[in-house]
Amino acid sequence: MSTQRLLHLIVRFIPIVVLVSACGGPQGVTTQDLPTATTTAATPTPISSEDAAIEQVAAAGMEALIKLDWEGFAEVMHPEALQGFKDMLVSVLEAAGEQDRATQAGLVSLFYGAQDVQSVIALEPKEFFAGFMKGVVSQSPEMGEIFAGTDVEIIGTVHEGNDLAHVVFRMGISAEGLDVTSVDVVSLKRSGTDWRMLLTANIEGLAEQLKLAISDE
Image 1 (cartoon, rainbow, N blue to C red):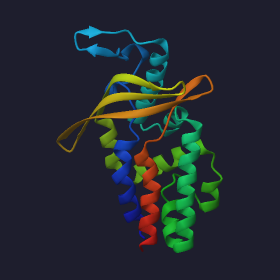
Image 2 (image 1 turned 45 degrees about the vertical axis):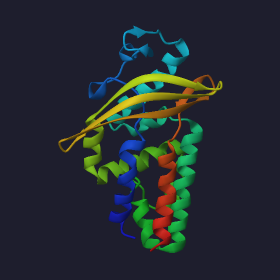
Image 3 (image 1 turned 30 degrees about the horizontal axis):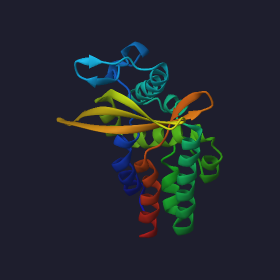
């Protein structure tokens, strides 16, 4: 499989599913910018300190995303999510090596600054994630334009038990003259005393799609 085809498959998934909830758009996000949850448009309800902390993490993620600061984005991801992301793509690298060394080399080239498979696998999860995202965006500049044209507004936070929270957000993307708006959810999980973002199911599906594409060659 060519590097170009691998990149095409990845770009199909990345622009939307790594977006996290935050507000403020390309101008940046601050704690003061965070909206309050509302029961109706006319009757705002103050959010709890815990929900504010959750949404602040999401805000930091969005600001990093808009700046294409993948190291900063990785800082607000949950350690389990980072490790899971690495495990999934390492499995793709290994599957590619069994199938076709050229395909494996193409995958390695998607990691920013990587020299070989061993150097990629040796990366810590945060560096692995950041290196992959930087590499993909560097080979697909249009992704940067999509992120820069993104505006996200938090609607509210819903808790599931004590350690999991789901932030509902409205996302608008402007690219190539098209404006698209959708409502979606991002999940966060406790990590010690902090909250950190989880990956979406679509990101997890990326590795499976790549392995299937490789096996079909």
